[in-house]
Image (cartoon, rainbow, N blue to C red; front, side, top):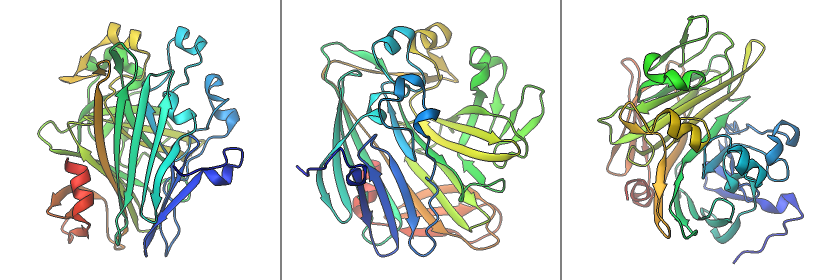
Length: 356
């Protein structure tokens, strides 16, 4: 096992790299905190909270940053769980992970989340040549009882990649505003439009006025894969994720404004449908739009889920993503409009990690 000095924050960072890209993982909280092309050094995952910005029940552990894993729950625990020291978004994002294997382009890491009752094993593999990485996560219920749970990937983009021109695309379909979760089926949204409380229309690809909210959508029901991308016209840079729809049928788009400037945009995907404690979920809706709003794992059961992430430069006339397909060992990104596809040739290993 690789040893790290946990009293020295610098020793909790692990960096993988190839000739053109680099990815950094922080063992304190397990977050992916940096993914960039070496020639421009723009990191979409620059989001980071301070301790003071964290919920009170999270302040003894890691602060939210980059792309972290919500496991056990998505959002706030119940009052009793908070009294038992359970943090928001689950324990794995709040505690130390350990690295069990590492080389230049792969790290294996694990964590025991005893409050949630999960053991997590994660493998992060950076392609040997391309700016693509694959993550495989296996969770085991180490408690003697089955339980409800949720598992949500929580990447959040911030400046300098994020500005008011940034375009978010996905293969989302119908959804709702989490602020209206009790009335979701009476206030259905169709991607990529939403409404603010004054019924003003918001284009979620590029919002133009301040409204702090989380919008949740199901992936197109017939799709094999779910995907979400963020494109920076300022930097001509495209960043995105691809995963099996069966693993994660929900997409959640968090937006937070600072006056008239967009400060954070969450590109979240997972099993959760409602951003509430489980008692409230059960009393509100166990399914929405024919999708479950939580998952279940039996005692001793093991569940594995995977995703890919990529980053690439685009032409100056690029205006967003229309579709993403997987063909053999390549990601085929179809731009909106009559533009040539972007093809990222990646390794058989990474495509295998996505599809297994």
